Each structure stands twice: as C-alpha cells, then as structure tokens.
Image (cartoon, rainbow, N blue to C red; front, top):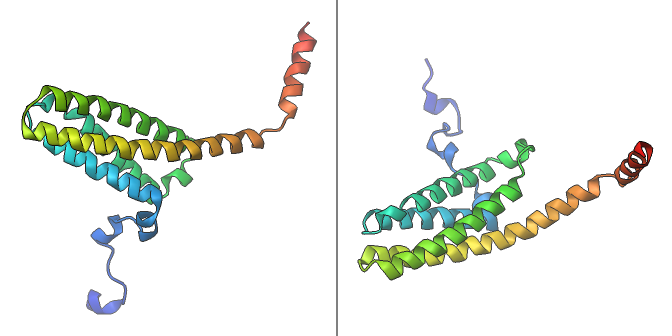
Length: 169
C-alpha cells in the first residue's frame, strides 16, 4: 500500500479548510465582521467576570450572529441563497447591535463600579463605533441593492395595475 503523505503534493484538507480565504480577510466586510466578532467575544468575557452579568446575553448573541455572517460571507452563502436579503439582514443586525451596545455600555459604566464592568463598557463603546461604521457601509450597499432591484422591474407593471383598476370601475 502506498503512503498517503507521499501520494500527493497537496496537503490533506484538515482544519485549514475551515479558515476563510485571504481575499475575504483582506476585504472591508471581512475585517469589520472579524472586529465585531472579536469585540463581542471580549465584551462577553468581561460581562461574565463582572457584577453586570445580566448584560452577557447581548454580546453572546451578537458574537454568534457576527461569526455566522463572517463564515456565511466567507463561504459565499449570500450568492448561493438568493431568497435571503443579505444586505437588509446585515443592516438590521448592525443597527440593533449598535443601539444595544450603546445602551448597555452606558448602564455598565454608570451603574457598576467594578473594573470588569467598566472594561466591558469601554469595549462596548468601541463596538458601537464598529457596528455604526458597518451599518453605514451596509446602508450604502442596501440602497444600491434596492435601486438595482427597482430598475430590474419593468415599468409596465404600473400601467397594467392602472388598467385593471379602470376595468373594475
């Protein structure tokens, strides 16, 4: 029997197959999603170690959502599943995350006096800025996406609808 290491020159697809492509990691969206995931995880850890542990669910959910979208965009699921409006889902995620992080960061910094709560609040403000940048960029992409969708529809639909309204009279 032949030794599998000497059989081929390509390395077997192990854990490296789970890593996203370098092109995506260098893209603006990839860097934003990676920053959102890292910040959300750090905030989650800070809230676990703090007196403000009741706030830990929001960073955990945002971490999981950012991680899901990171791998969804990296594996190009947005191109495979056209039924999901990816820019809209991403925009709503970013807007809600920015608002929630801003609110819980204010509460953590003002209400709790331990260091972990203060650290979570500071990282929360940084995450608010990152999510705000992401939803601004995603909003521009969403506007382009919606304009593209409206230009694809023929203008004949308006005349057909107007004709059917006049027929019913």
